[in-house]
Image (cartoon, rainbow over all chains, first blue to last red; front, side):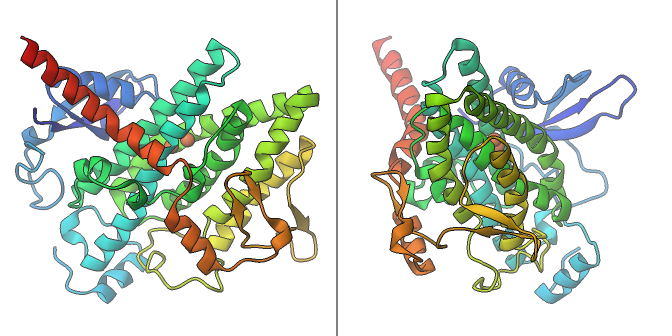
Length: 74
Length: 318
Ligand SMILES: [Fe+2]
Ligand SMILES: [Fe+2]
């Protein structure tokens, strides 16, 4: 039972930018969806999605949380 | 980019530099941020069992549901702060499940029992107000980008907790009679408790680096003033007595009791008649932790063991 880090993205209104709003740790994608929706309930989001941190591929930076495969198996 | 020394980083931060990753931190910066985030995370976490045990005293199902909504928020806030700690090299697992009760870094106020509905709503009015005071200052001043962004949600929800507290304080005070008496009792122990929460007065404070690294902006005494500037007028308006007043000459709020002061946990009462205590005594009392410390921490840590044990049992029975 290994929890993974998922990053949460959302936009408040139609036409808004999708923005990184937070993160959850979850055992699988389905749990991550539920945790994200329940944890970040401060707005009535138009759209929300989660992505495994390990699936984020950094383009220009070698540092920070998205670099490497740090999100995996934490 | 790797910075070689503390002074260089401090200078850049004073010029407006925002830190975005662990790799950009000096060890001094990382240590100071860990201390700040641990206090923040532990405070959010301990508020959950404290509020949860108090929510049993809710006067109706509806009111209990609002209390539970607040508890859910607090757990989310704790998760956010521990998650931030993971990104700078700490382990959430270890912090939540691997520490002894006395090793948590939340304020002494969250080692105390909340014994009735008035205690809970005054905690929302006073403790959550203290949280907002501290975190708004962090939001406005922090040099750590991820923390600033995470605080948007937290602040929004803390404002709701505060409103819950103040609306209920008003209802109880307006109701008069016994309702007003119990809310006054809560105010009596919780007002000095929150004042103490802000820590050492500025003239005694050791230099901590939190200001150099711009992890916060205001000093302890300034934060105490901000908290009193909302809390004292509210209580006066509601006809609740608080041991502080506004001095129009110095334009500051002044405490009307010896500070620091000793607290009698058995009686839930500040021992004003013993006069001024020392901060050494206060630190000793904080270190010894309060009556609910073990119970609150245990209630958080137990959940994992109970669920783990239950699952193992089911597995064996299969
Ligand atoms: Fe909170
Ligand atoms: Fe709160």
